[in-house]
Structure formats: C-alpha cells, structure tokens
Amino acid sequence: MSETARPKGGVDLQRRDMPTQDAAARVHNFEEVALGYTVELAMAEARRCLDCKRPNCVTGCPVSVNIPGFIRELAAGNLEGARAAIRETNLLPAVCGRVCPQEHQCEALCNLNKRGASVAIGRLERFVADWCALHEVVGAQTAPAEPVAASGKSVGIVGSGPAGLACASDLLKQGHAVTIYEALDEPGGVLIYGIPEFRLPKDIVRREIGEIRRMGAQIICDFLVGRTATLAELREEHDALFIATGAGLPWFLDIPGEDLVGVMSANEYLTRVNLLRAYDKRANTPVPKPRRVAVIGAGNVAMDAARTAKRLGAREVSIVYRRSRAEAPARHEELEHAEEEGIRFQFLTQPVEYLGNDEGRLTALRCRRMELGEPDERGRPRPVEVADSEFDIPVDLAILAIGQSPNPMIKDTTPEIEVSRRGTLVVEPETLATNLPGVFAGGDAVTGQATVILAMGAGRTAAAGIAAWLSQAT
Ligand code: FAD
Ligand code: SF4
Image (cartoon, rainbow, N blue to C red; front, side, top):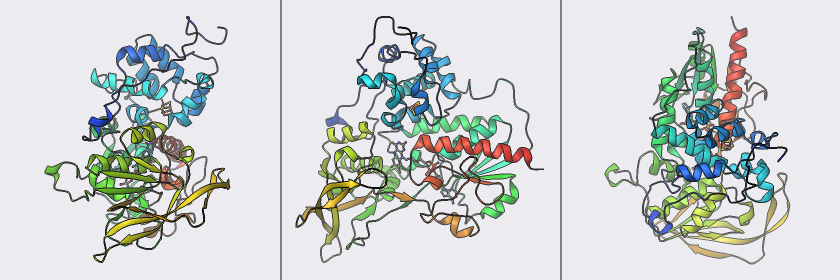
C-alpha cells in the first residue's frame, strides 16, 4: 500500500459497533445509552485506520484534531500519548467523542467513508478520554511543560459553555488570567443544562471542566452579566472580554393556541429535567408527566426532549417534522436510538394549530401534510402544503424544538454593541472582535444554535484574536 502505513493485512471494512443499553431497558432509566468500546473493540477499530499521507479527516474537524496521530498512538497501545495528541487542540474529548455530528465532519471525510465504513473516529476519541480518566491520567497534558510566565493581563469570559471554556483554556496556556462569569449555578452551558444524562453524563462534563479549573480559571456562577454587572463594568475590570452566552431563547411557531397549558419549549423542559433533576423524585422539581407527547422539530434538541419524555413515562411520543427523515438535522445515532426506543415519527407534517379544552389545556395538535418542493436558499427541499390534508394528533404536551436565538440580555443592556437582525452578535470573522474595543464574541451567540465543536472552534479563534489584542494594548 503506497499511500499508507497501515493496515498490513488489507483494508478492513467492518466498522466496530459500540455496545449500547438494550432499548427496552433504557427507556426506564437515565443512564448512558452508548456504553463505549472495550479495549479490544477500540484496538480493532484503531487498526482499521489507513494512516493516510493526506488525512482528509483532519480537515473535517473544526478544531483540527490530529486524528491519524492519536489513532496511531492508540493502535500502538500508548493511550496517554493518544490523549496528549487529541488535547493539543481539543480540551473536551470525552464530550466531543459523544456529541459531535461526526458523520458530517471528520468521519465524512475519512478515506474509508467512500467505501461505506469510515473509521469510528468519535468513538475512539471517547474511548481514549474515558480510559485515561478511569486510569487517572488526569491533567498530565493540561499544564504546559514549562510553566508560562503570567502575562499580567486579565480576560473576562461571559458564559461557560464550550465556546467560553475553549477560549479560557487557550488564554490560560498563554499566561493570561481568566475569570468566567456564568448566569446559572453550574458551569458547562448546554452540556450541563441541555443535553440529557443518558447521552452525556454530567460527571464527564464536570471532570473536563475540572481540568480547566486546575489550569487556573476562576469560575464565578450565579452571575448574570447585564444584571449582576453590566458589560461596561466588566470591561473596566478586565483587559479584554469574550462573550459566549449561547443561544438560549427558544422559537415558537406563532400559531393559534400557543398559550394553552401544555405547550412549552424544549429548552424549559430539558432544563427542568437536567439541571433541576426533575427525573429524580427527591429533587421535588415540577415537570409535566403526560401520557401523549408531541415534539415539534427533528434536530438533536427534539430527539433529546422526546427520549426524555419517554423516560419520564409518556406512553406515546411523536416527533412532528415538516420535512422527511433524510433532512432531519439530528445526529444519525440519536435518530436511530429514538426509533429503537419507540418514538413515532410524523415526517412531512406541519402543525397549524393547538387545540384545547374549556380549562385551557392542550388536547391535540392540528397538522397538515407536506410534500417536498424546490430547494430553499440553504439547498434543502422546501416543504409545501398538501391541500385538504388536515388531521389531529391527540396530545397532552407539545414541546417546541424548532430553534433558538441568543438571549437579548447583553444586547438590551449594552445598546452600543452591534447585533444582526436575527439578534446574533456581529463580529469580525478573523478575530471575532465585536465593534466594541477589546470585546470579542463567539459560539452560538454569534452563529445561532450550531454545534459543540463549532463553538469550541470559535472559542479558540477568539483566544487568538484576544491574545493579539492584548499584545498591542498598553
Ligand atoms: P452554550 O453552551 O449555550 O453556553 C452559554 C452559557 O452562557 C450558558 O451556560 C448560559 O447560562 C451562559 N449565559 C448566557 N447569558 C449569560 C449572561 N448574560 N451572563 C452570564 N452567563 C450567561 N451540539 C452538538 O454538537 N451535538 C449535540 O448532540 C447537541 N445536542 C444538543 C442538545 C440540546 C438539548 C441543545 C440545547 C443543544 C445541543 N447541541 C448539540 C448544540 C450545542 O450544545 C451548542 O451549539 C453549544 O453548546 C454552544 O456553545 P456556546 O458555548 O456557544 O453556548
Ligand atoms: Fe471528529 Fe469532533 Fe473529534 Fe473533531 S472533535 S475529530 S469532529 S469527533
């Protein structure tokens, strides 16, 4: 094989499956669904990598993880070396290995993908991170070999999701002091309050955030920028600021009946369950536990809400989506897991009204059938209504998961900051600088709801922009 160093015995097109909890059992618990590779499975999968001279997979990763490098170390049995190779650019490997949409990123460009079976890069990344945590290979690569001299500069970061954490990590490595301000009582952003325990156990997020604390980040929780202090006041305290406040404002359909009891956003539903532990009887957090649930939307948020409702005891849970399965934006694995768990899918279906009873409670979702038409500006087929196709789905709870915008708190309390018509912060693309001197922004607050790894990539870009700014500032 001229282009590659491995494998010696020919190309192995058998991608190793990851063991999962049985569907019938897992719908009754909140434990993690995907159980992770065993050492044997991970080694076998790692040996499938062709170690290509031109590794396209790396270009598919928004933070350019050294994929062939870490897989090479793993295949050689050097797990610590594999972890070090990953952490050169990715500080949350156990998280990314679980939630990245790999099929559209690194794995889509793996040369074996053309032959139908890309290397399971995300699963291997997860395996390396989990194995090292289990064997307490902690922090070894976090601290730089030579302690970096303190720069004397301080940076304030608003928001502790993946964008804020990635920015913090890069700035700390350069000797800058970092303080993260978080509105909620625990850091992590959507990783903590959005993505459910059965997909991303909170202890894993806490473990990875622990490493950033060890690097020296000060994290101040219950601090709502715009209320506890204004952005201008924080700017006085720090040499630069990074705004990474995410996109936590849910969209609604704006159709009749949206004010009925029993219509809520996925954001509120998942926050109650995840952050306030509504699934735990001892937590005493109120959360609706209806018999019939419809979740509107077909992204990751919708799958999470539907699968959570199932676990909380709902008999019938439907996903209602106006396009077809092929256009559903959720990760493939989440869609498959939802199907296995008995979630029903109403594709090509658009809700047009919520119906209620005399007490103002939701009783049904009135929908119309759709068909696919010409592509829209993003290239996706436009859903077109089918005439006279109305029908009702009886439900007690409708959960909206059709998208989110940035919360307007920063914009409302800092009117001089430039925002787009969509409410996203406007930045200079190379450095992520806003129009306010020394104030940078990135992640979902700039792009609208995207992905964990894109937010982390933005955090790293901003850290580079901030470092350049600090070097010029007197
Ligand atoms: P966030 O993670 O939203 O973090 C922003 C933080 O800022 C929050 O902690 C918030 O409390 C804080 N904050 C906001 N305003 C203020 C303020 N004024 N003062 C102080 N703090 C403030 N992506 C994937 O890649 N894969 C998935 O499987 C996936 N599943 C998802 C499932 C759900 C339910 C949701 C909601 C999102 C999912 N995403 C997924 C998207 C992904 O989580 C986000 O794109 C990512 O978290 C964005 O990171 P961020 O740092 O920009 O913002
Ligand atoms: Fe793939 Fe995500 Fe890992 Fe990058 S961080 S290599 S995209 S799984």
